[in-house]
Image (cartoon, rainbow, N blue to C red; front, side, top):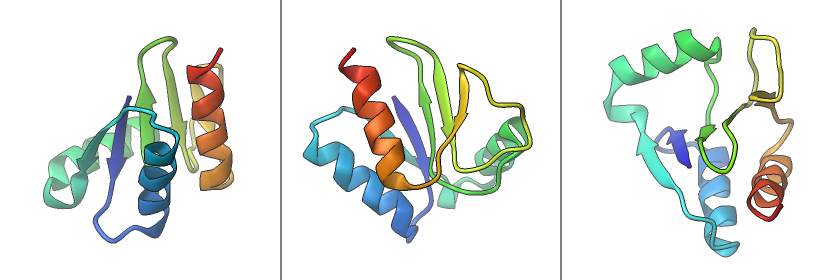
Length: 94
């Protein structure tokens, strides 16, 4: 699982802390120092908010705080960080 976060983002910090508490492994990529990657993510996922989470195993899912894309089984939006943590936890514990 890869998380794309911003330095100083409170929601990003909450997500990292929640996943650490649940011992769910992740790779964190701070895009604050990589504007090109941030621009690519925002264009691809039609989203300018963070954190964005991409999971490839056991199933492919992308979680976004908001998007102009149609949601589906592989593109999901979340309302708050606690909901996102719960969804990630449930995905890992199926």
